[in-house]
Image 1 (spheres, rainbow, N blue to C red):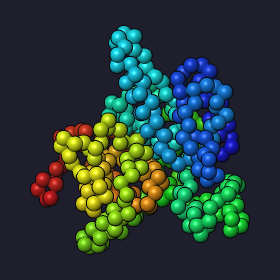
Image 2: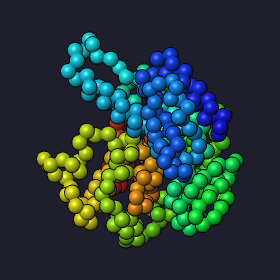
Image 3: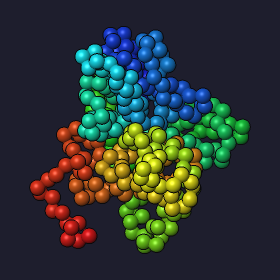
Length: 335
């Protein structure tokens, strides 16, 4: 892990020194001992701020998109011949590179506007699992030692196997190495448990309809409409979200049960063929809403119906953005 972090810093410093990127998005130590924070650096000497460890959780592809679009917006009053491109570097693991592939497929920016430092990933620590392992005690210090996390809290010292507190998205990840990159650091990470990727979805599908709906309503009752899930998702980049449109108004602004359910249903279906299962939405949700189960159901449908996995390859277009003459279209005759 330390060797990867060192290589990331070296490559970032080199990219900025040689002016190959205008800015680089990575992680730095956060204000809490169990959290790494996204950071944007623009000078070579800032490369020492970069870290790579199991606390790096948020999908950074969101920042690449926003930086490029902010730059474009700043040039709207500039003559076309005088406009410049902003090249953004990024430290990216497998799920992050899949989000970048989706951005490129959806023509959000060009391939020469992003430089990818690909890093192998063995999963990130889910804060809720960490707190549960500590019986709710606040961690005062966290040190990674091999496969173990040594934690000091008000309740004392504790050693926790990292595998026990990894995000659910990481436990069954099949893309823990970059699918696209310009620079690779470290050795490829070993596979996780991709064979169990849809176990939870299979179990959920086998429940009676009323039980599935009861679970959905129970989870959505937790939602306070803070939009943290939307704001952290790399695939949510609309300039105006449907929940904030007034003409027409799709959904109310209150936490009324039906409004909350409509918001979540529409956002989830917007991710059809686009969710890379990075787990960022679940990680940032302050109420612990189980969004992943519903997103993973759409992911499973995408593979079962179209043999498609979101962001797997630039050459594999999203199922809702492509047409095949070999599509059986069974859903027309057997809805």
